[in-house]
Length: 250
Image 1: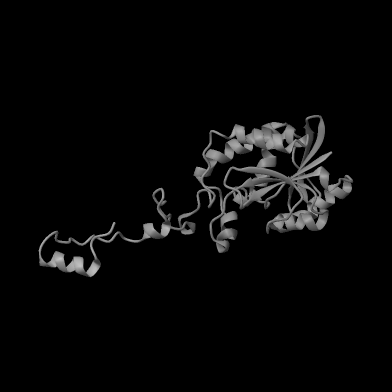
Image 2 (image 1 turned 30 degrees about the vertical axis):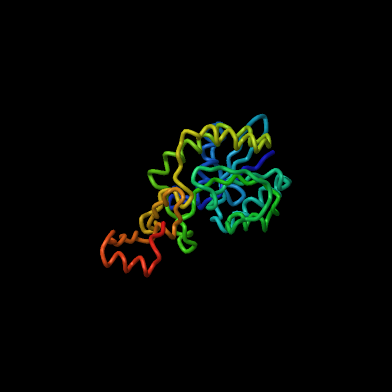
């Protein structure tokens, strides 16, 4: 049996938040694979079904993000699951919007949901990291993740969630590299925004700097080009300048 947990916060207030992309992903998996109805158990909403011949339990913790581990730990103990039997789908600030990476174990990167799961389960579970970008300033992280995806984000978000659901059987089989490859191919026609936030609110945006011309440094480009003084070719002034500077230089 495999436990696939999407991370997020419960309630309609948070439903469209960037922080809830894990909930969105398991909702799409449940729909695509015709799982049973969502019910309440283990301090969470759960739905069960079968993917690639494997029994799968989908979970959306109802404990709020910071206590996600309570629900995950309770279900893992009940079914006698090891960390290797658990997959957690969550938002990732350090990946560009639309990028997906899968890894087993490792640090939590400051993600409070992962911190809680680490405390209740250990660190050796698999993580599906869905990039949402970064607002660019640490102080803006909390309002950024707790704000809704912008309309422009739907251009990459909807196809991405669909691809995750369609290729979930590869994830269930433990073929993480193939899963990432198929997601990348399925979404290759999309052009997600760059790393520093997908469609960050204007208040969160920093003024964009124009890229320097090829071969030109940022420092040099920032300086205003000084006008070249007109030097007379002949006459007393020209003779004086030649004595002072020893002739013209390139």
